[in-house]
Amino acid sequence: MVGTTVATTTTIVLRVNGDEQKLTVDNRTTLLDAVRESLGLTGTKKGCDMGQCGACTVLLDRRRVVSCLRLAVAADGKDVTTIEGIADEGRLHPVQQAFIDSDGFQCGYCTPGQICSAVAVLSEHAVGWPSAATADVRPGQAPTPLDATEIRERMSGNLCRCGAYVSIVEAIGRAAAELAS
Amino acid sequence: MKEFAYLRAATVQDAVAAVNDVPGARYLAGGTNLVDLMKAGVEQPTRLVDLQDLPLNRIEVTDDGGLRIGAVVSNSELAAHPEVRRRYPALSKAVLAGASGQLRNMATVGGNLLQRTRCGYFVDTTKPCNKREPGSGCPAIPGEHHNMAILGASNSCVATNPSDMAVALAAFDAVVTVETVDGTSTVPLSHFYLPVEDTPERETALSPGALITAVTVPAAPVASHSTYRKVRERASYAFANGSVAAALEVRDGRVHDVRLAFGAVASRPWRASRAEEVLRGAPATALAFDVAIDAELLDATALPHNAYKVVLMRNLAVAVLLELAESSR
Image (tube, rainbow over the protein chains, first blue to last red):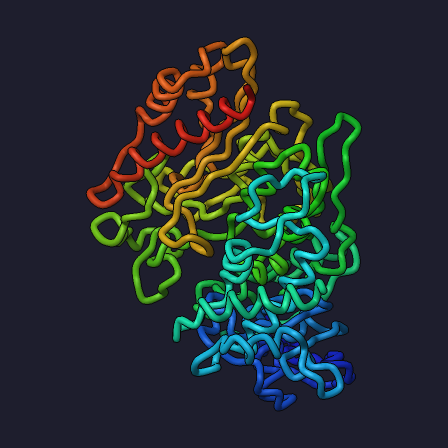
C-alpha cells in the first residue's frame, strides 16, 4: 500500500424513509453517523456505539439492525427506515401510539430504538420466527403467542436505563393485539 | 479507527483474490465483531472486502439428509429455517440464545465461527494480552478471570470462545468448507480450532486469506431430539458462563446415541467425546449421566474465581441429559 493512493471514501446511495440519498462517506463512517450527521435525522440515537444497547436500531431492508456496527458503505443500495419513517403519512404507527398510551418511556432516549425494534419484532413473530423463549422450536407447532415472556426475550437487545420495561412490554403487547384485531 | 479501502466482491474467487492481493486486507460479513474491534483498535484492516453479495446465502438439504449452510446466511435465517428446526433443534436454539434480534440479523454463520473472545483484556489495547500481542503476558490469570476457560487452557491464555452456534455445530460434527487461492478444501470443526498451547494468537486452521464459504452438517437421526441450554448472568442477551448442546436417543432405557458439547469453557466449542463414550450403552439414568460428565471434567483446571464453572457444567449437562431422557419416554 505504501506509495499508492487508495480511496478511503465512497459515494453511496441510501433509500432513507423512501427518499433516495446520495452521499460521499469516509469508509469508517457508520450508518448511524451517516444518518445523524450527514442526513440530519437525529431521531436515531447513539447510546453505547458498541452494539450493546440498541438505541441506534433502524430497519435495513426491513430487518432491524444496530446502525452503530453497520458501516455506511456496507449499506449502499439499501432501504433504511429510521424512527422518522415509521409513521404513515403523519399517522402514528400502532407501536408509537401504544408507547404513548402505555407510557412506555421516561427520558425517551432509547425510545426510537425501542420502537424500531418492536416494529420488527411484530413482523418477525408474524412470519413465525422462534425466539429463545419459544419452548419448542420445531416447525409445525401451534404459533407461540406474543406474551410478555416472548416480548421481553425478543426485545432484550434494547436497553432502557430509566427502567421503563414494564410499560414497554405492555405497549408492545397492546400494539400486537391492535394489529391482530 | 484507521482508514481503509472498501470493496464488494461479486464472486468467491474475486473476494479471495481481493483479500490475498493486499497485506492487511480482511473479509467483512455482518461486521458485528470486526467493526467493533476496529473501533477498539484491536483490528486495523487496510482493506475490507464485503461478502454480502456473494451467492453463499442459502441453506440446502444435502443428498444424505444433512444441511449445507452458506457462509453469509444470517444467524436469524439459520435459526428460523424449518429444516434446521426440524433436523437440528439444538442448533436453532443455540443461535437464538446468542446476542440480540438486531445482531442476529446482521451476524453470519462464517463470521460466527471466527468471532473473537470477549476477554476484557483482549479488547483493551492498553493491556497486555498474549492473543493480541504474543509474548506480552496474560493479565487474566492473576486478574479478572471469573468467566475464563476450565478446559484446554494454557499458561499463555485462558480466554473462551464466545459462540453459542459453534457449540451445537461441534456436537453435530459440522465440516467447514474453505476457499483459498489454491482452491476448495474442507476441515472438520473438530480440527478447525487449534489447541491454545503457547500460541493463543493462532486460533484456527485457516491459512491466511482463506475464506469460509459453507458449513455442512451431516445427517444424524439423534439430532432431531436435541436441545441447547445456556447459563448466563442476565436472563437474555449475555455471553454464556456455561452452555450445553446435547442430543440423546434412548432405547429400552439405555443410551443408544448421544451428542454432547460444552460452550464457554474453552478456547473452542468443547466436544465432550469422553462423556459420549461413557454414555453409549449406559442406562439413561441420573447416576450414569453424573459418571459420564465427571469423566469429561476430570481434566478441568480452575483458577480461584472460575472454579464454580466445573460444578455448573456438571449440573447443567446432567440436567440437560435428564430433560432429553424424560422427553424421549
